[in-house]
Image (cartoon, rainbow, N blue to C red; front, side):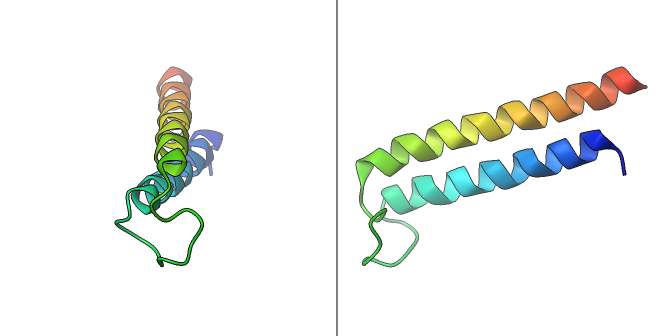
Length: 68
């Protein structure tokens, strides 16, 4: 398996975690007893993590294209 696929996979997982954190901060997903639930800080953290995931995905795609 190429490294670029692994990097893209890690980026997708990172993006999904950021999305979950964002949705928990917005009170859409998760138990009400969670410290992340309805916490505006986690909306910001989730967006930041999603941006990092997008950057990692982009690096994986670029490295895949440049390798050809």
